[in-house]
Image 1: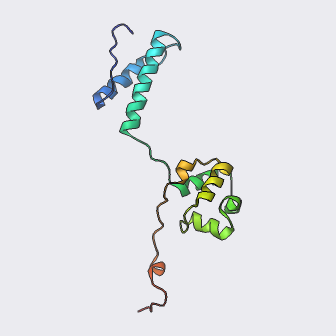
Image 2: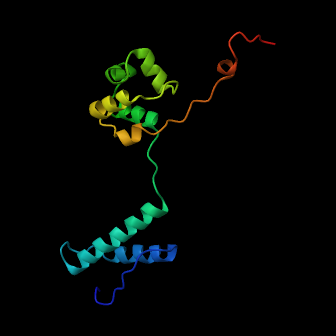
Image 3: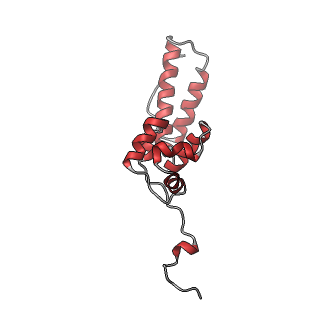
Length: 140
């Protein structure tokens, strides 16, 4: 099986399909054999192509915090050591206040959320009609 195999970079969708087929044929290969090593090479090439072709963005910071809360069965009150008083926790979770460097550090240390996720700017929450009105402006 390995004597006549030509391995080259995956550049096109056809190359990708051929690589998938080649890896599929080797799925039962034993580790540390010629076939097992060949499977490792194909998988590495496939993973590199997929990462380049279909990159996965980092998650939204607030969604990452909410996900961790769900995983660990945390309530907003449980975030106070990381974000501050309950009002500030609410502002952060409702996208009215950005995360500060201190918050990011505490969240990374305390909840294990990577800083590279938390430093991304969270999308702003759309303004409501009421928030968009200037103070003192009269209603018509």
